[in-house]
Image 1 (tube, each protein chain N blue to C red):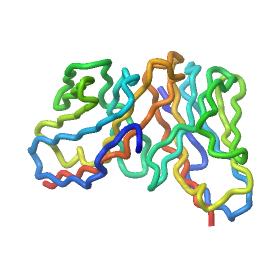
Image 2: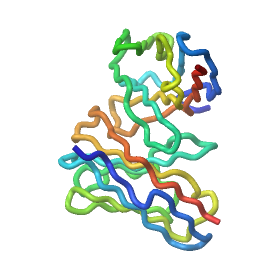
Image 3: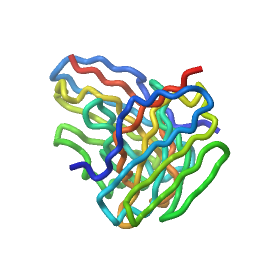
Length: 112
Length: 114
């Protein structure tokens, strides 16, 4: 079983929809949680970075962490065709050297 | 400023050949990471450098894989005697130095082993 589980999709939504992307994890040592966005044939770029439980909002994006359930989410409001990409969750243990553990990535398509 | 750059962007090689992949981190970033992204395995950590030292090599899949970093800057990932299962996108990331600092990724090198 992978340490971080993420449904690969694909997920297809109409423009303007609210998108919910999720990851679950098994190791309670994960303390730092990230969401990266990756366009086709590009490197991942950081969208959101949160520490421990709670919510963080940045524009149309909200990241949510529930450590008690070992569950993290990324919500995208008013989705746009330009949001079409693969979304990767990533996690970092407190004892790690900076080694990120990634989910498989969810491919999102937003249709105009 | 300039981001992380990697070269070549694409590399096609024959099974059994050696390949070298290069990463130029963001200027001033002391931490450098290599990851591999393949269809079946997702994005996996390979090795971490702090300066020129590699305190974490735990992700290197076999002794055919090695990496070095010189001058606290450029890093080279070398794969000897390439196999078809080495086909993947090799991504480099750099950060300012603390393990919790944001990692900035390069565009990757797409390696195809025939």
